[in-house]
Length: 257
Ligand code: ADP
Ligand code: MG
Image (cartoon, rainbow, N blue to C red; front, side, top):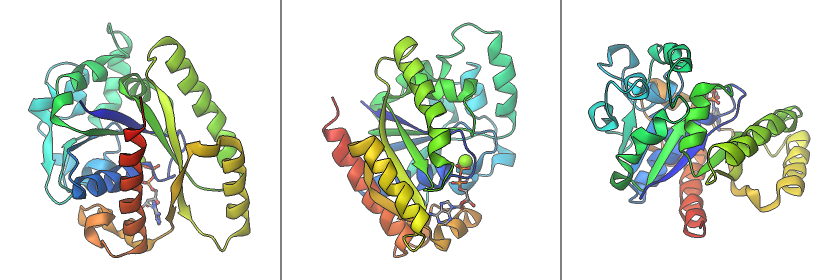
């Protein structure tokens, strides 16, 4: 049975998509069966996995509206070694269309249940807001991975996300928990980043992952080649860190109830 994780943070540009595709590729490299769900209408995880979002015949949009199943829509991300439920701009419409439909929070959960035995991990790349799409992700998941940059306003934004997760846990999904906070784009030479990192550990303790992802230009270059950085340049510092993170995740879920 797959463990399902949302990669979420309502801020844009904090490394959600980079974390999703690189963790997926890292897990695949150590023998895990992985499905990536692109839940962002920007389709960055789709493009970054080497699938052209402009030529999709079906997408996660069709799955949410129940006109197709996950098995119909999923594609192989060959380079990364994982499966992908792709997305494009059409998904922005689903947000509006779902509002009037029944079980609008639970569409993704139902769809993923049908393929749970096909995977060890399902990673959901959430959009940069706490909207109905993100809610579908949170309702489906066992846990949330929160990538964050160690900057001054990072902690402020975190409380909204933590509150949303609490509410979903209380009302919609008793399984949901924060798995951990992942420090990304980290530059140890910047004193403020070290300070925020220490604050995070003080506040969240063991919920802060041991692995730290450094700022590394190879990770940023990889998407334009339609590949996760872990595949594009496996020897680069950023790729090595995501491989380490994949191993840490495997260990963490071994101790999850
Ligand atoms: P989000 O999905 O949260 O919007 P992205 O993963 O798209 O964030 O990252 C935002 C930008 O930062 C992208 O251009 C990405 O390539 C770049 N980026 C992400 N992580 C790193 C990193 N560790 N080092 C350098 N650049 C990064
Ligand atoms: Mg993104």
